[in-house]
Length: 396
Ligand code: PMP
Image (cartoon, rainbow, N blue to C red):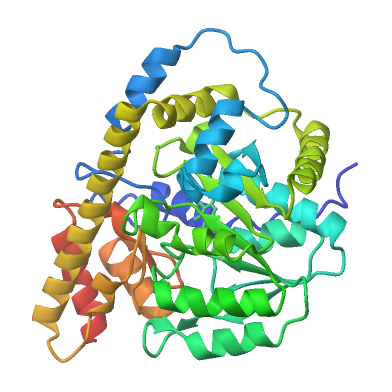
């Protein structure tokens, strides 16, 4: 019956996690998956989020509307766009609660493909693997735009701008407003201004995926590119996720925001989003959405939560600094300053695939073949081992 069905090769990151789990070596360290761990190597639940969960309780929850919880949708729009954003007062933002950031990407991708079927999508080279997967799954041809420069461990900024200048109207460009996954290499505010002016001139469609708000710098500055896109009145799509910054991984909490030229068009977009949702999964999960709503709508909990996210951010920064200090002391002829310039949970380490395999085979340290390391998996208990092993493979 199913012999003609193609075998699934598996997801590269999740397969590596399985290999790690089967590794019998007691000192093994996984820095492969994108999860925030605390200094004890545990997945923390922020106290503000726990307080919200306790307020809500675990009693029966009815269905949410197709577009999700109204309060949640309003709070997320304020968090991402800024509470005083004129586009909100003008009712020009369609907001939908989604199944995590992935669900927001999928809903947005399906919408664009249906209503702009000629559009092509470009993602950064490299990007989170599933960006390509989700947009191809929606029927798009997906290409890449120049982004990461392995020579400088920075951005190929001029090439990126030149590429954008050559694209036809309604080309979708998928952008990471902060904490670029997988490289950790972000654009500065000035660079965003330049890029978004090109996006405006060329009439491109910016799709901004923000999965790590608060991990880069502040909640406001991490959303700089999104707010600038709104100020320029671009046809913005913004997908966001509370998987990492509220530890809602398994609860599937995210949102899609779409900026429309008029309130009437925002309603049209929202209507099609509801239609899509109804035909795929009918309504989003209630527990996580309610939790996030309680955190965001209660000023005390919201302030506590933001402070807790900044603690996570600062712990990641401290680990970056430690890595930089040890590696610079061990290999003084090499410039490791990129470790402290990069932002967010991930770092492109500059390790080659051979060096990555040596780390895995000789030291039981798991990072992705691309050299991506999850800095949030480092802690006081493992950082010395990781830094020593990295120094050894870099030195060879
Ligand atoms: N976008 C990016 C850049 C991500 O890193 C992730 C999660 N790894 C997602 C979207 C998906 O988020 P979620 O897990 O909430 O679906």
